[in-house]
Length: 296
Ligand SMILES: [Ca+2]
Image (tube, rainbow, N blue to C red; front, side, top):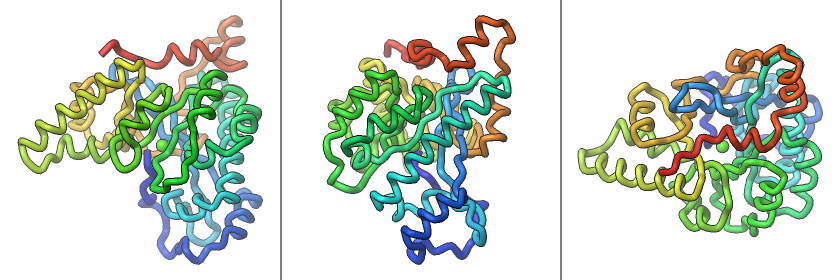
């Protein structure tokens, strides 16, 4: 999901006035935190995964969402550092949840296609993620993405699930869908909000037909679908009717801190054999089984 400015953030922060060196210093001073937004099964209401989102706990300006320091994320030097930090922190949070006796869910990190295509990204990601972190390829307005296919294939070969983010707007196109072997398709929230707030009856009819076709198309390609930006019960009813597999948005929960996210996780069964599975991480093929793909 593309990040929206956090409503709770205090005002007065001006991203343009912050240097990359200051951002890197903030990272080193542990001013960044990861928040987690649950992804919910439309069919069962259970948590199926979480998207990790970066927040800057600024000493003067309070909690700042990534949308507010987006320009810095386009700087390769900072983006690489913060990306490595996010993968490590997400893994540590997962390990902490497990030590607390909770059954964890797949956590995904947003990765810019430009960084995904860089030499060395895949091995360093795999080394830190240890099979616990998935990837969302985020939308980009830049045309210098490079070829992400080798990286996506290499990651999937190691059991990493790959999602295509913000589908249906901008550059996240059908061409991308044809090019890339992916596991999840996250349909942009603009579509979801339009479903329950259409301009005209004809608009609603076309929108429903298009989304229904997108969901069927994804399922035909064995790709699970996630509706982004589900904010109301009416939104959820609409995405359920269209056959979406998962739902993410304020209706379920905003992104919350790692400790708050515990409320979404079930205790692991204390049986010794199941402890063994949950403490080392669900085997990758089990993780794949969790994807609820319908035959379309
Ligand atoms: Ca995302």
